[in-house]
Image 1 (cartoon, helix red, strand yellow):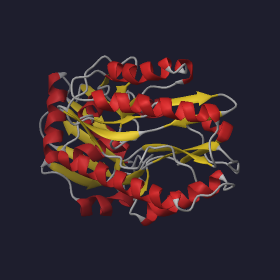
Image 2 (cartoon, one colour):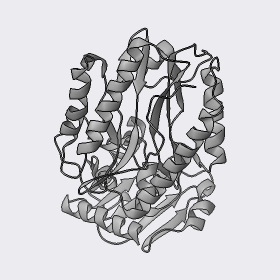
Image 3 (tube, rainbow, N blue to C red):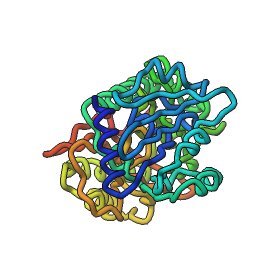
Length: 361
């Protein structure tokens, strides 16, 4: 029923904007509206919606059986194109009679645009569906919660096997083993493990580098369950940390705890970011907090809403966001702590359960 309601809500947007029809190709958006399974980077399904009348999900033979097995909402017809034919080309042929066609302008490539533009007047729909996706229902939150449970459990098992001198590759492989054993359907993004001076790279991929005594090691990872993502970060130390790294860790933890304490429906992304940033600035590391405080998580690991300096809009009940302050000292080390939380009317539900006290292995 929820997918059926989403389709109708989107069709209402089509009508409100004076569109005759719309074409949806972004895999996450097709899934959101229909429940049809999706693979990242796949373009094998095209959803064609008229303002009035039929709604069609056009798929390749490769995708048909799985899509049909999953089922689609009432009122959405699945059509399989012949082998060698393109779902998009099939839909383009049906644009006859549609004067104004809504397209996902932020997703379509120039190549696809060129193939479509001669068939009708193309009108951008912007982030219409993405804005719908920002508010999660109970089913979506349940899937995200399950994904986060898998991540937390796997990390605790990984901690028991980590040891000084282990390479980043080795540490990542242990973590990913337990993530898969725990039920992860896939990884939300490439697992990040970065040690010592490499920990200053917020998106640092694992390398053959071996962590030395007292160095910080950043683990940032997430999994997918039912299409939905988790995301968390913990910074631990291989051997007893020294001097400034302890001060930085404590400052980052204070910043996160301050933000978590004020997060609730109504607070703007900017004010939430400002709360954490003030703590880090007070500790003398303001210039080394080089990214926003957080972002939405759902079918994509990075989506709206944003908890950052430019977002003046208030968060709303049902948003799922990360809270992840970080400090990065070039040439030395980095520290980031990230929890995944659900915004509620009077506060948050923190989905992340891994301890945040300073951890030494």
